[in-house]
Image (cartoon, rainbow, N blue to C red; front, side, top):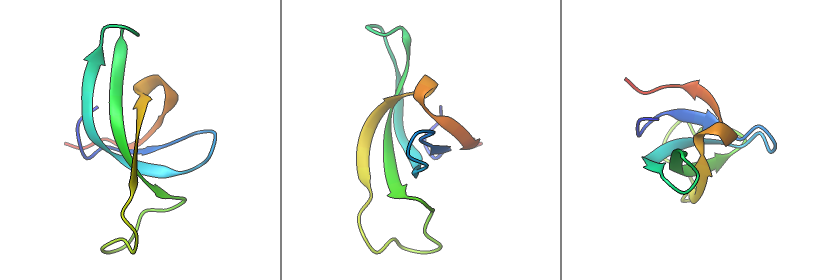
Length: 67
């Protein structure tokens, strides 16, 4: 996934944006750092800094792919 892609974690419903993506040879899949905002994307500057977690692409639902 490209940085800027909007995603949802299917188990929690939390949404986020891909910050960085790469191919992980250990799991032979695309891996990502995702900035999570909670249950919805902010309309403007977020009140709190999003937390960043590492997730493989197969564990996320793509909502809107960047460019």
